[in-house]
Amino acid sequence: MALQKYFEIAIKSLTERGLRSWLTIIGIIIGVAAIVSLISIGQGMQEVIDEQFKKVGANRIIISPGGIFFGPLGSELVSAQLTKDDADFIKKIRGVEAAIGVVTKTIQVRFDDETKTLSIFGVPTDSEAIAQIKTIGFFEIEKGREFTQSDRYVAILGNIIAYDTFEKNITTGKKIRIEDETFTVVGIQKRAGTGIHDMIIRIPEDVARALFDEPEMVSTIFATAKEGFDVGEVAEDIKVKLRKKRDVKEGEEDFTVQTAEQSIESFKTILGVVQTVLAGIAAISLLVGGVGIMTTMYTSVIERTNEIGLMKAVGAKNSNILLLFLIESGLIGIVGGGLGLLIGFGMAKIAEIIAQAFGVGLRISTNIWIILGALLFAFIVGSVSGFVPARTASKMKPVDALRAK
Image (tube, rainbow, N blue to C red; front, side, top):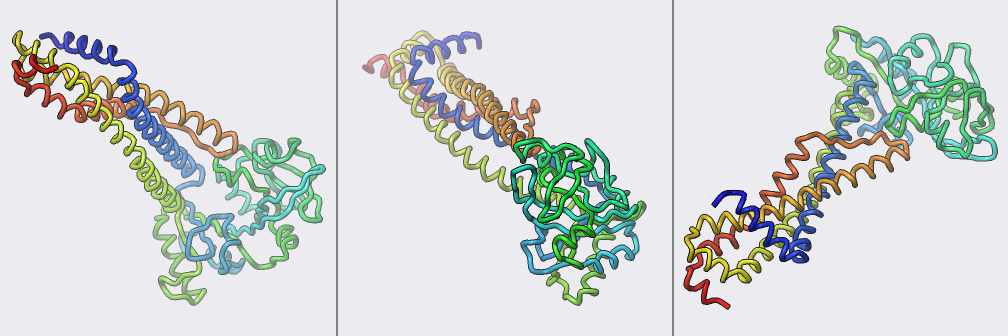
């Protein structure tokens, strides 16, 4: 019998059992949709993270207070502190091109009649620091200008702060109040897509220290390795020498030194673990769908016992019956997989739109391997689930099958 005929018989059988077939297919749809949406979002996030790494720069080293990496806005969560003296010390370490100490605080900001609690980022405005800041993609200016050495009560806003935080947009030249001081907006950053960098307000470091009453504290130190030096080795050297300066033992550091690549890899590792766990949970839906296919196929075997007997009586072999039922169960899987694929991508796209509306740089990945993998996986689940019922059907004796009612 030609392969085409097997598919014709299988499709006819599934059509005749319409409601039952669709109820079985739904189980596959749910499982595939969940897995596809999670994988496409996860891979998309990995691509975004790689892009962010390029913006940070491969030669960046981040020194944070505390034994756990909290990032540029996390220093308020730990008791240990870095100081301006630490930043000056790091500048002198061999292989370090520059080291910028910044101070951050979350305080109230007022624009027109609205008051919001936002993150203020006090940055140095000397020529060396500004030159370094200009090389960091997260701080690119979209409108206005970067700081100059003579700037005092001026501010540069993250993109979300300027356009999505207050009822009215904040443009360059507008005035905002931070605590009791008035600042003129001189620049607005391009949207970085990280969330954090789009939600900060940068002001000159000296002004920030006076405003926060923090003459020495440094929230984070951003260092740059010189060209020709291994970034990892420079980072390790900073760790060793800073540990000695702060008189702490190895393994008991009250600070964290990470290269930009290490911090990006940390995020990717966490993302991978979360993605794997969620995909595992989603796979349970596929298992349930597989059980549904097996139940449906067993029911089909019982209902079509006479038909099986007739087919064998006219010469059908065990292999023919086995192939027919495997194709039927495989079709259930691949139809469910195809619909699940479309729904999964749709769910992922909705998540992307919602995330971007909140300023999170999320996008989905729709490469061909996800599509082919999902369809093949669904077909295999269907075929494997239908194997035992198909084998049962193929082993029936013609006389017994014809006598069945």
